[in-house]
Image (tube, rainbow, N blue to C red; front, side, top):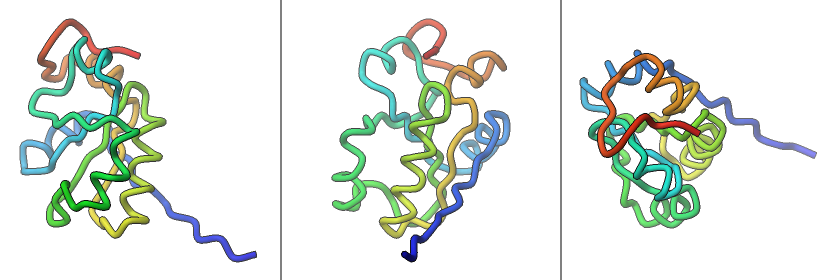
Length: 116
């Protein structure tokens, strides 16, 4: 049985912030109640459940880099793999998610500390 294995690139939160400032799109995959507690400044919210349709419909730009983030990094790994399978080539997962982002004191908006 042949099974294609996709390696998903991970970036740490500090590198993700640098990439975002250089033009990368940060997509937060958490549920609405998680998003409301606080999220990466400037991030776009798409819940993981909605992502397959959004990718299929081309809502996310195919040009440029997309950084997926969640609470801890698990959902974002799955999302980056799904995006790669759908033809998106410049995608990555933010290691440690919003928990690590907030612990480093990186820019958060829309609520208190983001956490799991």
